[in-house]
Length: 97
Image 1 (tube, rainbow, N blue to C red):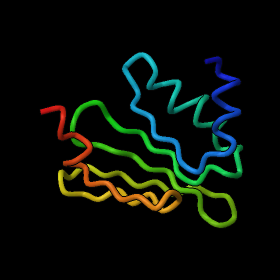
Image 2: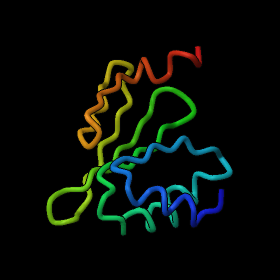
Image 3: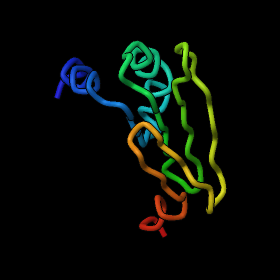
Image 4: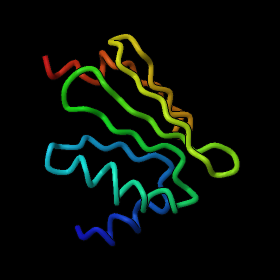
């Protein structure tokens, strides 16, 4: 899949969840994130660390600005309102133990 194809698919998406590797993290936080912010349909952008426990959530606010929330506690709950989903960090990382 080319980047352009991925961008096209994202246009209809409300949330994007990324699990960056060491080699893609700078890109996911930089150019990709900059590009994704241009899609009006995108409401939530999440970066899930490969090591427990850390999830970063960017949520589009009214007017187009973005809020940032960091979750680092095992029992923290990530609420992704745009897709009607709530996730407990402990559950996200359960298979890594």
